[in-house]
Structures are given as C-alpha cells and as structure tokens.
Length: 491
Ligand code: C2O
Ligand code: CU
Ligand code: CU
Image (cartoon, rainbow, N blue to C red; front, side, top):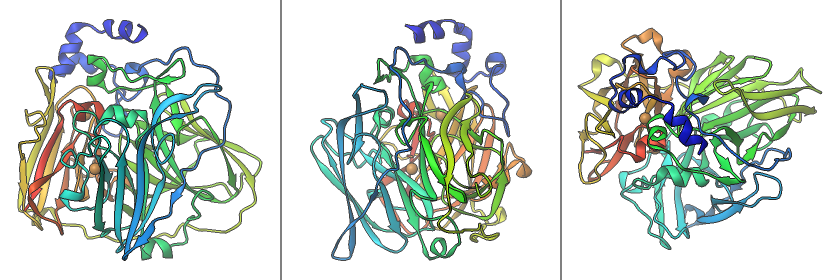
C-alpha cells in the first residue's frame, strides 16, 4: 500500500514523460548528471520496507572459496541452484534462492589459461540460465537466454580462461525473469588470477585482506523479501531501502591494521551506488570491471551502477582501535562497519604500475554502431526495438575495431553491458576529457545518466558463432527483463 501511494503522487504527465523518454522537465529531481552522484539511483523513487524484526549485528559473511574438482585436466565447479532460507533478521527464516548455500553463491577462483567447467544443477522448479558476467566465453557457453536450464536439468559451461585477472560474477540471465531470480539471491563472484596478479605486492589473502563485497539493496516486508515492482518502479528501477552486503544487514568486519583490498560489486537490481568511507578518507582504485587499471587512481568516492565492479585498496595502517564505515552516499546508508583491531600479518604496498593493455586508436576503427536506449508505448527498447530472442540485431566481424555510441534518451538512469569481451570508454557526451581516470581501464558495463551518451571502442576476439548470439543490454534488471536488450553474433 505504501508503495502504491508513493507512485500515485507522481503526475500522469511525469509518468508519460518517463515512459516515452520525452525528457524536458520530468527529471528535475534527479541529482546531477555526468560526473554527478548517481541521478535517480537514490531514495526518491525507492520502495519501503515494512514491519521487519530487528537484525542483530553479525560479522561480515565471506562467501566460501569453491575448490574445483580436477578431472582430465579440467577444473570442475559444481553449483547447485536451490530454494532455501536465510537469516537476515532475528528469529525469521527468510525465503531465498542460493547457490550451494542459502543466499548468493561461493566465490569461484579461476586461473588464466586453465580449462574450467561450471556445472550448474537447477533444483528450483523453474527455468534459469546462468551467465558468467565478465568472462570471455564462446557464445554457446555464455549462459545467456539461449542456454536455458530447465527445471530439474543440469548444464555445464566449459571453456578455457583467456583473459586478464579481474573480478567477474555469475548470475541468472533467464529470459524475462532475471530480476526476480537475482533479487531472491542468485549471484556469486568469480575471481580470475594470472601471473601478473600473483606477482603484484597487493593484498591477496582471501577473506583476510582481500575481501569480496557483494553490495545490494532489498525491500523486506515481515522479514520476507518483497519483489513487487509497480509499472513506475519498472521504469525507474526497483530500488530498496534495506542495504545488505554478502547477504547481511550492516555487518562488521574485523580488519588488520594494514592495506585492505575490497572487491566491490554493485549486485543490486537497479541502484546506482556512490561509495565512500565515513571519514571521507582517500583510497586507491586498482581495478575496474575487466582488468587492473594501468596505475592506481586515488579517490574519495567511487560510483558503481548495477553490474559494475571496482577493486579498491584502503590503508588502515594507522587506524588500530578505530572504526570506519563504508557508506552509500546517495541514500545515506551504511553497508559495512570496519573495526581495525588486529595486527597486520603481512605487509603489502600498492605498486605504482599494475598492468598495461593495448589501446586501440579511434582512427583504426572500421565502423561505428549507434544504440539508443529508449521507451516506446510502455516498452523499453534499444533502437526502438524490444528484445526478441529470434532476432539478431547486430553482426560483428571478428577482429574488427569498432566504435559503439550509446545514448540514453530517457529521464531515468540506464547503463550498457556487453557480453563476449570488454571495451574502453572514449568519451562521455562527446567529450573525451569527461572520462574520469578510474573509467579509463577495461570495462564491460558503463553508466549512462539521464539524457547522456557514451562512446567506447571494442574488438571481438577469439570466438565466432554464426547462430548463437551474445547479448548487450541495460544492466538495470527491471529494464533488461522488460525489453532493453539486444543480440549480436560474432562472425
Ligand atoms: Cu551481468 Cu548480460 O549480464
Ligand atoms: Cu554479462
Ligand atoms: Cu536501463
């Protein structure tokens, strides 16, 4: 009822503008744009949790590292997708989905060059598909809507890891049903290591000084997860007011007084997070979605839209006995309280050079493609078309360097994600200097505030398939499920 009332206060004119992307005055309450702090990702359009019991402070759950089973030179990761119950609140068993557990899934540690097999067993009683986001996989192993795992069926994604060290993640990509499945708990991290990542003097003791943080927000009613987007919250994104990290509400982490690396994933359905520490301390971002940055970038906050990752290193060497809170600034919420209360057991020091990567010159691009994120007659579209599994939207020749321009024609937040490979951002709103230092690395998701545009340079490599497509889409899951997705083959 509370949600209902909230949406009825929006005038139908505003609603129409949002639906059709007419823009104009309809987005006057979004916060900034461009380098701003997350547009409408904040609480204004948010949905309200009601009637929940207390949640006692717990310590930060660390998703277990799944040790693969070696068979015939292939590393097998066995993953059971299941309905379960999880404790978010005292004395309540919350109905959830999980992978080998009650909420989220284990962290898969994979090595560049090794052959892996992600073996999914679907026990949900409904179809699911499982995509490894950030992994460079052949199209038929990508886990998109074309590799559906029927209820009670199993499916394996088997391929050789061919990419730089990064933080990837796996999550459902079920046609029209991704958002509810992620919301109930289906997601997990994949960490890719390579010889370079192993050689750098970075924090790399998983769970000790290398800490995964899956950041999400949820609506809970009576202790249960409430996924009930109205038409308006489909357009604006279904944002919640209860913030969780690794499946816990404002937990605490006991840190060593040294550099701590956090692998941040915006695992929310549709919220833009601006993350910072309570004392506004600076930290170093060392990696973006698809690889280390070439050099660390010093920041006091980092903005992540859904699906984006950032690895950051925070130095707590001089903070023994103190507490620092990881905050989300758009909503003024606390994600995690860090108590610095242990002596360091190793010393690390972020190197000034982390990696190098090839930077294609825009003049070497052989073609340009344009994508318009918009809305039409209540549907969400890319170039005027809603997702159709039977339609291939783009055919991309292998090894061609291309420029893709993506514009958000609407008064709401969007972003853009491509499967298959990474890209490098060239400009925001046509302005090359508007790309911030921490967005100049290899990425696979880019945030596009209302009425803004981005350009990136991309090259498809290694894998072709004339029939099975990859996806590109907005990673706001309500938008993805409601048509803002397209398909491309690499030939
Ligand atoms: Cu993270 Cu197409 O997905
Ligand atoms: Cu993906
Ligand atoms: Cu969107």
